[in-house]
Amino acid sequence: MARRADQERIAQKREQIAAQAGRLFAAQGYERTSVAEIATAVGISPASVFYYFNDKAALFRAVFERDLPAAEALIARHADAKEPVSAILDVLGELAKDAIDPGASGMLVELLRRAEHDPDLIAVVGRTSEVVRDGLAVLIVRGIDDGDIDPALDPIQTATWLQAIVDATYLNARPGYSPLPELRRTAMGYLTTFPSQGVDHRD
Image (cartoon, rainbow, N blue to C red; front, side, top):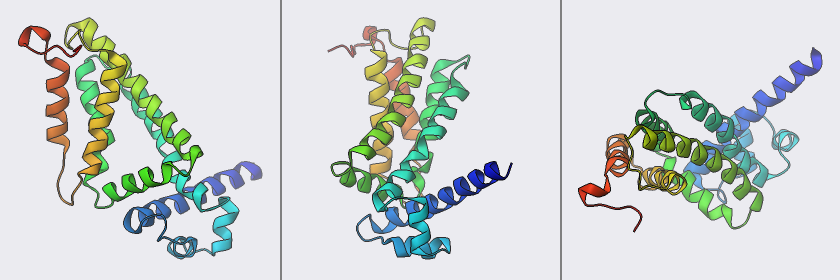
């Protein structure tokens, strides 16, 4: 029981450190944020940060490692939805909801900057992306089978494109502005525009 309590305490502390690190990385950038600043924000010593994380790069990765279980839970929550199109829109809305955060675009920019220097970071983000892509693709297939989604669409390619739209909401984020209405409109129009209406997505 004591060991389990220790593991839970460590997990909670790692989460607390990663949350504060994410906030500072988004606001100041990776290079301009020191481990000492993160430690101060958490209320611990810099040495304590390195007890939980091997180095600063590992701490940056931890910010994105938190996304994987959240993505898995999100997809699982909508996997058996009766209306696939509505489920897809809900998933996209959940993924993009933080774009209203002032630091949202900053964190995505830092991710793009760090990716070329850290293969492990690419792997972390890739795993989360695959979970979301595959979950969306399953819903797209179901929507096609139900006759609600354009059958000309390739499920995997369409899921990848929808993820790109979500990324765009973060790159164009600004305080106080919610991109969700435009996101839903764009996704809905793409998914439900059929070739007979003059658009063939296979071209």
